[in-house]
Length: 351
Image 1 (cartoon, rainbow, N blue to C red):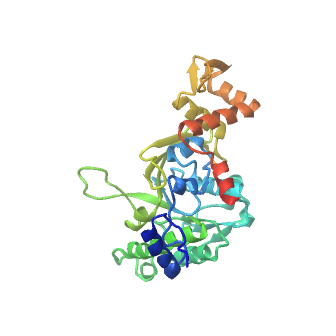
Image 2 (cartoon, rainbow, N blue to C red):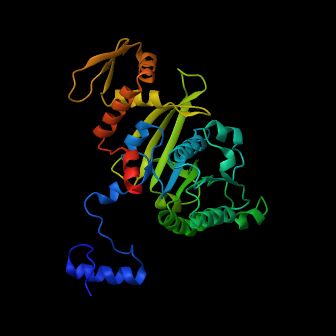
């Protein structure tokens, strides 16, 4: 019987075929140079700045992601932004799920982000065990593709719920999450489910040196998350009803992008302003240059010229009126970061 070629090394191929026959067809694979990254299915975040900082062109659709930050920083808003982009790219065939332990998110906010609340599954569990069971069972069904868990800090273990308010318990949620993350990481990979966990920042008491910040729920989530994004924001000085948001990539197991920060304007209830975001990133990497009121465009292998006048507002109006130019600038932004277009990669994977 001929040995199926896996690596091209006969001794390893014999072992690989035996393991794959015993444990399943994906036990030992040869991915080849850069094949693993090219096969990574990502969903654009809606911000070219964040896509390029992540280094992969978006967030993965089959991994665990943690979004954390201080109060009112925009954590739930960013999770809904990701959900909106998921719906835009994949539709409602595999509907998104919102597990609301905080019970603070209104349907009007969900709808304002471009998401049809009637096509989203909402869950309001009482305990962490219920919430994690929902996340596991729906993920295993293969019929949902995106699950938001809002939030870790609001999750209470059943033993903690039954205990009197003045009584103390140690590490119950952390132990529960430690067991659950091992399961969910496999569920997400096997069924192409993206899990987004929202978490809050707490302070370690008595820390004299270093960063006193920590997150709720112990170390299991930080260990198993493929992406950890720290969100911070402040009210925008130039746009009413908007936030100047910063997202720092604290952990990234998908590409070399780490400890970099994406900065963009987030319009409350609407999401990221894509044109302002494109201009901001193109300016930071040198494709656009502001000289007084003139906006200079300097694309690779082309001479610099004045694209328009009027500063930021003039640039936004010009790109809105010339979408082909905006797409051209966007392509160069991706290319300079060494990223294949996410849309092209996803299309090639689906074929």
